Length: 205
Ligand code: CU
Ligand code: ZN
Image 1 (cartoon, rainbow, N blue to C red):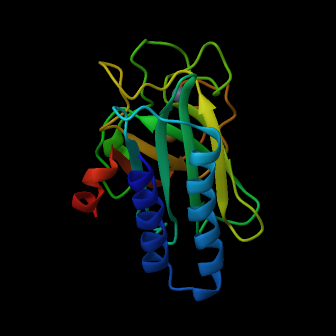
Image 2 (cartoon, protein in one colour; image 1 turned 120 degrees about the vertical axis):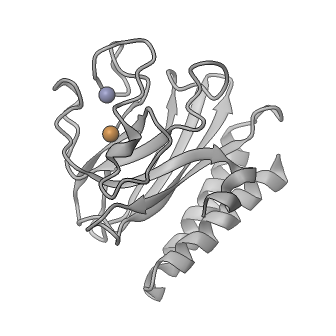
Image 3 (cartoon, helix red, strand yellow; image 1 turned 180 degrees about the vertical axis):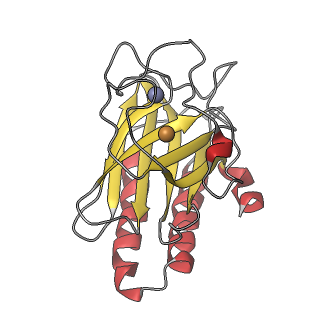
């Protein structure tokens, strides 16, 4: 498990430094990768049968500056989510969901379909009882346009028929209000990434 987690952190750091042309952010990348790795060892012990799953976020057409990654790992009490995104507008709020199709091929990422909603529920926020499984709320960017989120979610599943593996993570242009139907009025899709096992990540790039 340790090796796998370290590989994930290293892959993410390599990806981010390769993706960003700005060297002045490299310190932040290292910090985030190290932090994610530290966090996983410090607070969570993951069963060996459930690996680390990753979605590398790529900007959609017109939003090529946006990139990042999301990591999902199984915990006893739920699924731990660690997300990092950058190239966002400063101090902005962006809807953040798992969508039903693992297909980010459309220039506007509409190929990812709607929110992942295997139980036919209404849209909500991560803490709502009534929500789509994929409703993860919002990413909040700082003054540098960088967003970081860590949360433990109780509705996501990494195994079985309702697993999010092979689905897509989508970041939206606007804030998800967590109440409007069917998608929280979060607007266009600015980044998208397919959720894959960390082992498979090389093939996705
Ligand atoms: Cu969405
Ligand atoms: Zn939703």
